[in-house]
Image 1 (tube, helix red, strand yellow):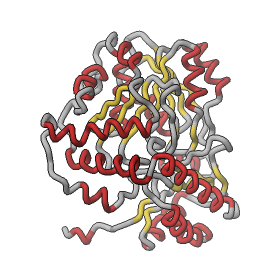
Image 2 (cartoon, one colour):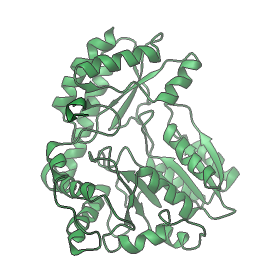
Image 3 (cartoon, rainbow, N blue to C red):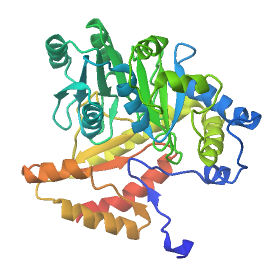
Image 4 (cartoon, rainbow, N blue to C red):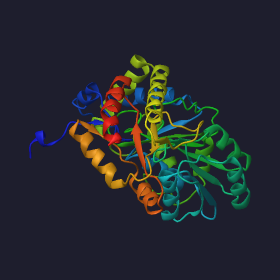
Length: 377
């Protein structure tokens, strides 16, 4: 097999995302020992810059897991839900469902509050579920990748805490693309990963944890090994990972976070995402029969889900995908399981447009220009 067999496509899916040439080149930097002083040269600035992006300080511990955002999410379930306690999994889409599945397969007493695709969390319904189930922990998705819905993290966390529960937040597709202002958010844990708005290869799960959550984790048994927050913290406090990290990714992450914080600038990065969100909204509104899925006030700055006109099938969208491939782009024909379900119910299916990470407004404009005639067909 030749490397020429691999297509060089611009990715406008919802992850993995476009990686800048400078970040690719950083993958050629030297390997290092993860218990050597060279490790600290990479991971100390990584830890510092992650907190700057999160908008937090020493009020949160930072843990880097080998794996993905799912690894960090599962650790919160294993470490913070004790035997006999109830965890309430609030879902506005596929990845809220995933958090619920993690609780179930780990043998936790889990109940689910599920909203229809395109809906945000309704605080009235959430309060009713909190009153009924009296959970110790509540999981929810800050930014639902399958539907492009962003929930009001501060309001949701406040309501959860009013009922004495710990809010466990999945922020996988938002972190690095928008301000989350973690300090004061009310989140007990906030999980994310490298391959979406941080514009890095996949390979690390990231978790911000309050001291309060750490104290709770100390009382929970059977937390596993890599999923034990307390066990992870020993190495995290030394700017290390519990197990051997992907040194190539660590080199890339060190370079990328330094660029985000000190070259592009955090505020400018977030503003660029909002600019691209507006470009996509204007594009969708210009297409007859197409409609933004998420309601006003809950639309993601990193991914937009779009209802296509009635009569357009999943098979039709796959044809659009191949037409865009021929133009050098990877098009997102919607979240597979969700579209299958919508089509079986006779409802309009979705496409998604990723506008996160290091995609520029110029790149996005070229993509939308190329996409418009294909959607018109």
